[in-house]
Length: 115
Image (cartoon, rainbow, N blue to C red; front, top):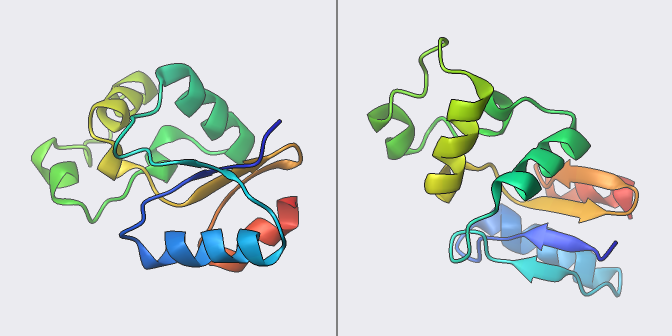
């Protein structure tokens, strides 16, 4: 598996995480998920690697989170995944995937565990 980072260049944590990877002489495949949204399959695979439920990967502070009523506990995983695919800004970032697993780069140093 190629080292990958789901990256938002406007996010300081995402930039810091990418820099940590580069400081380790690694050049990950950079996936700017806001420009090219993730597929449902890749999002589900990523959730599984992270060991998270869809709700745990949502950015609750985003305006669209409130507009879509995603705080509703009756929404199922499929509905939340659909919301993230249609509105990728809702996905917590950055996420690094390696052959050893996946980590959210919060804090950025957390990704060192899977290198």
